[in-house]
Length: 250
Image (cartoon, rainbow, N blue to C red; front, side, top):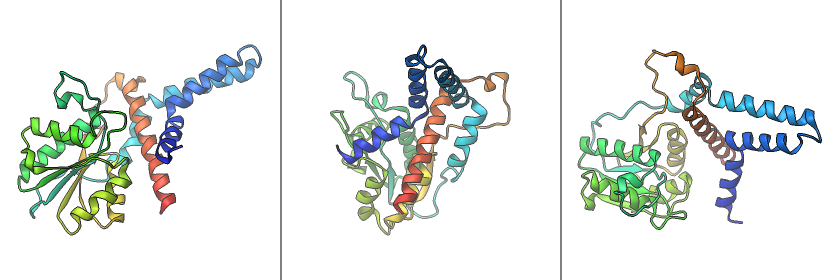
């Protein structure tokens, strides 16, 4: 089996929702044979679902990942490259490229466009492979960037990196000793910065769309479980696993 696919399968199985579904399956399977095991699995699944969807806990897990770097402000020096790390999309005929991007990719693109308007001298590098789609993420983000007003000749694509480390490996030779901005999701940025530094690139961090936006005011609904917080917890856990793997490799 391909190592990259195996890594994806393992990480998927370790996600909160996958564990919850496994516990529920065990609860149903042993409902009559082992009632105590069934009840314990059901209780554990319910507890994990509640706390994974509970905003105070989810925000506590995510905030340390997202608060490592401030929002990008105009650089005193000219910017040579703005790198947009790969996200996800789904090609669909009849929809503009901006609507084919999933939320993480769209947020990264919007942040890169904002930075480009501050530094129109820069070139943009989009990155990301095709997976099972007809188009690479790098190409789809390029199409969306053109729709948003970025000149086509200002965009370069890296169509083959499958993960963050491969992106750093492939892009680093092009941008060494240049003034570079690295754009990715706020929670993903610490891991991405470490990989690019490993390959000799001291980039300026540009966090895109942090999910925790605390203005100090919280209504009663904040303390109710919510599906978006389950997604946020999953993202925090995914990044934690990624950083463990990164640490083991180093």
